[in-house]
Amino acid sequence: IGATLGPNGPDLLAGKGPIEIEVKRLEVETAFLSTANVPVNSGSFSSLSLIFANPELTFQNNTKPPVTIAGCAPGAVCQIKPTGPLTANVTLNPALTISANNPTGMQVDVNLAKLLSNSLVVDFSNGSITITQSQVQPGGELEDVDDVSGTVVKVDTGTSTFDIQTSQNTTLTGIKVDNNTKFEDCTGSPVNFANCVHLNDNVEVDLKLQPDGTKVAKKIEQQNEEANEEDLEGIITSVDTAANTIQMVAVENLSVLPSTILGSPVTVSVANNAKFQVKQKGLKVDPALVSSFNSINSLLVGQNVEVRRRSVDGSSSSSPIVTDRVRLRMSRFTAPVKSKTGANTFTLDTSGIGLFHNAKPAAIDQITVDASQAEFEPKSVTVSGLQAGDSISLRGLLFGPAANATLVAGKVRKR
Image (cartoon, rainbow, N blue to C red):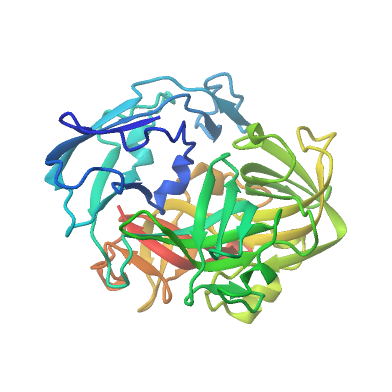
């Protein structure tokens, strides 16, 4: 709810209202604070105070030995409102200086291992937040922000811009389309982009943030296959092939369901005639892997999937969301390296991660990672430099079977 530069600096979020942040996403992605509204030549700032409010936590109780924690029974997926220090005071080193010839911004990274204690207390004050200053990149942007999902609420063909409303009820205004914008599944240009972007469309946008605060669309991906489509994305926590149902925790809500569904466990019934698709997001995936994602039997705990909602709210096993389409999306998680298996491949040891180790119907204790197309952070990191035990956060497409799980990585961040 606040991001104040010190000493005596402005609040970078002033006038923007509360902004909802999915902290889990920040394992691999980066939140960005623009300084476009800070007066030029306003001096140097040596600190940033971030104030958070109303934290919510969704977790699966995988305690060993099994015990009830925070009122959550062993094996259950629960949502709670944890307590703890909600202010992070971060020293900026070097100090932040805003000048006309030196546009800059700040990347905000969250370390989940430091943020949460074993008793499920959150603590933003203990070094769980780190700040990195962003300088202008070779392409002219300050920062790239990928995988922004939302519903189109305004299209302005005169200025070649559009607005979207995200699952978190944040409206991103004035997203610019230029000659470099790529349209997936549609032939577009700044002149006729309205042929590809329509009111009420569900879209996923890759953005670049310019030094002046302008948001430019690098890529626009149409989510709809029909008008007024309703989609819900979540992380699978259990699969019941006999009942043709899955349990998942909702992370994106592009439907008429209330925003409070985010972070909630939902039940999804997969129709017998459901289509299964893979959103590759520019990754070149082995066709054999793509074709293997073809039924409920190919669903795994830990996968991110988007389902098209056909009925009901999914609030209980007796009232499941019915879907006729399941799309594999990018999973995000953190795990230790187990061993290197090739120039661009390595395995992860997921035996200590309850979500995977306790997966039903079969445990997922190892995942093979293909990092041949991955973006690495820091840029100096390579597969050859990884060591057993290194903690890394990944974004990629997760394929089964459980005994031979494979992640085609788009991003690898060394912790």
